[in-house]
Length: 310
Figure 1 (cartoon, rainbow, N blue to C red):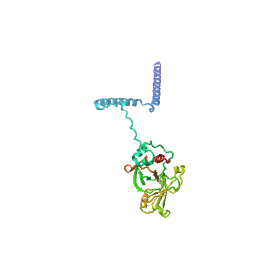
Figure 2 (cartoon, rainbow, N blue to C red):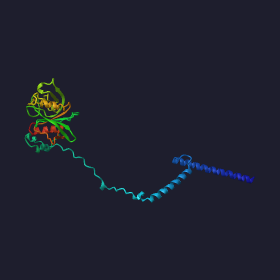
Figure 3 (cartoon, rainbow, N blue to C red):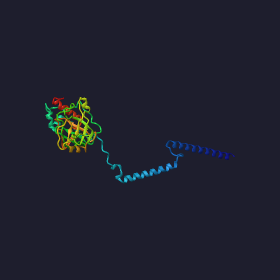
């Protein structure tokens, strides 16, 4: 009985010990699974097996790498050292378009010397005009320039760097010289205008030819300056090829007014430059900084101040 009792007691104690060991292992596995997010129960045997295989593969990779020198990091060219001396400075921006100055304009436009007292070459750069107007929005595909000195009308097409001259026509202008001031003074106005209407026969009187383009004289600047009058058009002559002086309009012969209709449209901008200024033309083009409202009105102020008429 005592021997049996001793054996029975030993067996119970052994099973209790095994149960405690199993509980400790399971509890440890659960902790590890929660910590490393392994699937519970923790696959100890698989991890051990995969770890052993990983070590074998790592050893094989090291042997193969050192067997082929070209594959080692020793043969990889080192990265270039970064020094401030090798910094690439940014490229400078393109040169801005030269400003219109009295000297640069005078060099291209001899007519300026006829402005009166003083010489344009002695004047300072053109300042911002006291009165000007923003370039109207919209506009047409083509821009028109009236050179009162040459008595020519240019049809211009805008390019990236300049305005290309598409064609030009001889004109007749007002019978009196200078900038229009009041109704009936027979002067052709100078400034930036827009085509606001097109007139054709039968509403157009015969003496204006087959077609006329109405300008918005007086514009905003003209009204501020107190100018009066209206009815300033670009029109034909009604006399075929012959043209004569006008009452202030811009006239071209009947054949050319029909050609002009291919380019003119409502909203198109018309620059009428002042007398004694020859619009600079280089390689059949005009610089963009010339065809600008501020340039036109600055030239007007300079010319009339020099001539003592402003």
